[in-house]
Length: 510
Image (cartoon, rainbow, N blue to C red; front, side, top):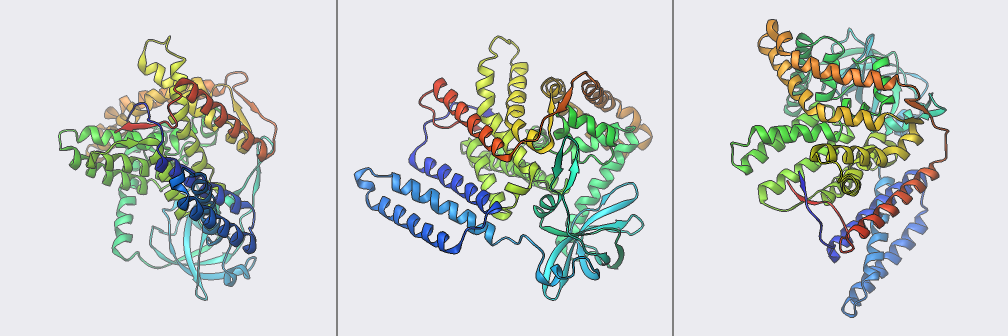
């Protein structure tokens, strides 16, 4: 995906970004505070007056009213969208929290299988109300997406729990972002009937292909290489073990094994390259189909959905021969995801980090790359600039959420990220060999094993360096907001200093 200098924003573009910002601010406010109906209606009236008056006075060059009114109106839409989103159990189930219950429902997720149990989301109904609950079931129960089940156990509300570095993980909010407001640990689960319906079978088949793909990796690669290959190709850290997972966190490389936007874009580029012999429109259409299926099979996490939507916009631009603006695509993806699920903004750390990292790549990477002109190798210069920009963009939120300040994150990312596309390609070929020729799979998996071993060696080595990471003292969330306000302020100043005519960045072609 190439970049080219942007042109100054016209009024429509400025109005789009202003309205988008207002919508996000409204969602953020309502996620933490309740807005009285009287105040909401008063602000709605003011917004209507500003927009109406601004339109009437536009011939006289008075556009401020339209912009301010549109921003305020979008903010109110964001507030209203959160207000209409369920944030707790329906009364019929809320009254039964703490009690042993028996509920009929349908498995609504791919089973997350651990060493001694499996977690599944179950959509249950009770007295006309529908809700999702997280159920911990025995491994002996054969569960898959769409299976009709009856779950029996004690209904509980999820609770935050303490983590290292004097932090607390908001488990309740993490589940709320998925529409889950209750858990049932140590449940008894009985299967009532197998999955039914076209979509259920289609999605189930997709998940089955993924499961067989991951199983094929184990025929070609030893552990932990097989689990790492599965992580970079399909997301997930379950097979890595706690020690290696902690090392990935300490070195700031955990994003490569949880299917971030980086992985999705590599997949999209690889599919387009493989289809380069076809007409551009046909190749883009097929690529969009496969990227969508890939994101769904990988669990449809917030980061991968965001990247998938942006890739879809880029592929559509390719099909229709339109200019692709990565900034507008990112903002449009944010708006679409928040309109569908506004709780992502305040409750999904993965969504926030993905968005921040992408903004860093769009606006920060060109500024940093301009300072690295002394590096003659363009690939090295771009890699360092992109990695540095993304790390800076996510640092304040990471420090607030997990308290880990990694001194090795930047060099570790620079050493590992260029290898990831080749490791993904080699791992894919190893899995194919595991499918068609299991006996020869270990030999075919040798290139992947070498690359994956290099990644794990870098992660292990960097995490064990003296002062590789240390605990950062806990601080109020307001400081995080202030840090991003300052970061945005200085970034805008640097962009304007570099090119005063540019009011936005990120126009490009795919």
